[in-house]
Image 1: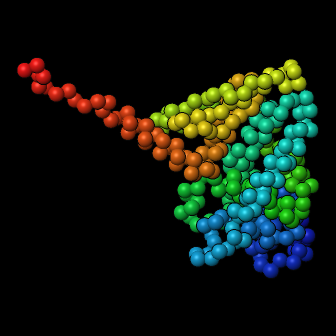
Image 2: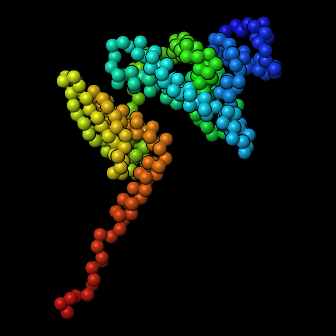
Length: 278
């Protein structure tokens, strides 16, 4: 896309490198930033923060948090309007596919955002989510700089119309249950999907609620209009919880350790070889 260099030159920027950044941001967003500081922060991985500094405003984790919430809201809005006849389960699944980390990583690469991220070389080679995190932070920066409507324009017109085929993404099946089963098998964990509620919504549509149980510990629940859908939603919620709730994950492996220790213990003393009748 052509960038009006004269317009950029009229923007008061203290350094030449800021002008280059504005040009790059314009090519991605399709509009100019009002406050370049937000975008600088969005593109700064936490590894760039000064050692010993509290520096929450020096890297992009806070903007990533904000952008995650804004992104979910905007994608929900777009899908709600686009698929007016589809149920909540379909909308939720499609939104999950669009905002999942793998999708955001690919987006960051395709729009040229990944190459703008600043990090130390060690972190760059070991962090496979850096691009996706920066994409969320970018959305947070747009929100602070230009507001919700600008975020909507970016996602609807620059991303979902030009980069992602929404209908193709919606049709793509993501099997969260298989992912969870595979994880449990690799770690030799006992996993169960248990239907804990079955009812009819509005006296007609069946609704199922499934809970995952790992090593005897209650996991997350999922709701769906079929048992399969409720299993998928429970598995998805469980996978998310395993990543964020470290205490619960630790409790699962502690329970496994206790179970395996009990299984390895002898169930009775070895019989004596002495004949009691003698």
